[in-house]
Image (cartoon, rainbow, N blue to C red; front, side):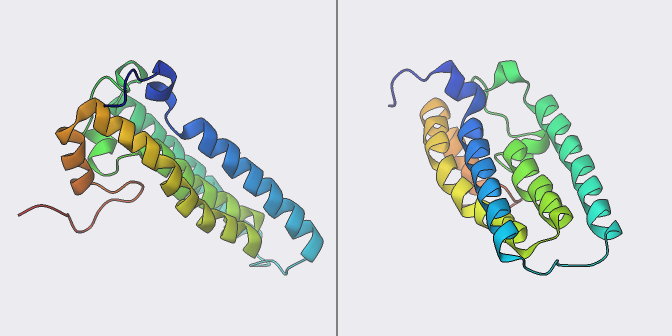
Length: 163
C-alpha cells in the first residue's frame, strides 16, 4: 500500500507536471522553429485555423463531459467508469493531449509543432504511470479490471483480459 495519499494528488494527478513539461517542450519547439526555418505544412491559412477552432470545441465538450462524469469532489474518492470514463481512463488529459495539442500544432503550421504533439504522447504515458499506481492503491482490483477494458488516452478497440 502506498500510505496516505495527498489530496492534491487525488485532485490533480499528473496534470500540472504534464502541462508544465508540455509547455516547456512547446517553447523549445518554438525556439527551434525560429532558427531552422522549415517550410510550412500548408500555405492555406483557412484550414489550420478551422482545425484549431474545431479542436477547441471538441476539447471543451470532452472537458465538460468529463467533469459531469466525475465531479471534482469525487476525484480520488470514487472509481468512475461511466460517461467519458467509459471510453478512456484519462479523458481530461486525452482532450488536451490528443485533440487540443494536435489542433494547435496544425494551426501553428510547422512540422516541428506536429512532432511536438506526437512526442507528448510517450511522455504523458510515462507521467501517468505513477498516477495509475496511486489509483490501483486507492481502488484495488476494480481499477485493474478497468485498465484492462479502457485505454489511457484513446478508446480501446480490442479489450484485454476479457472472455
